[in-house]
Image (cartoon, rainbow, N blue to C red; front, side):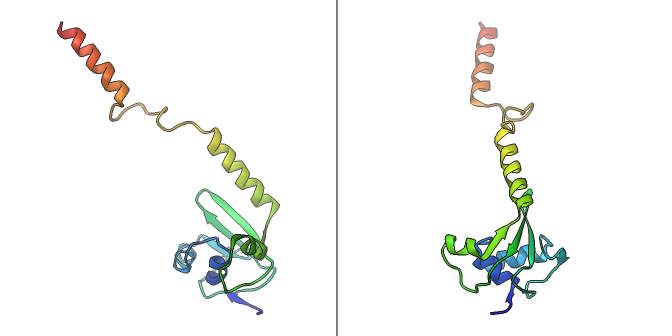
Length: 129
């Protein structure tokens, strides 16, 4: 097999759960091959560079093998090799998420929590007495 559709390869390499999800992201421009915008029917070859944006992180992988069948994860990981820069960026983003603040702690306005309601009720009951 010399070439394979990019949407099939992304599905077989387990980057997407279904081919239709891979196709959707390709149409949205989240996937590039060799730094070029592509269509789902684009033929992928060994040694092509695929960059895909998944959430806040862009993963860049080099195609090592082609497969039209979706297999177990260890087999799928042999289809590509992630670049060092991509791996470092992904680990840095994971560290930033881990060190980030809890969204509820930065909350200044909005619906009161259960603790807030108890304090409000306590103050109201003290004022009524």
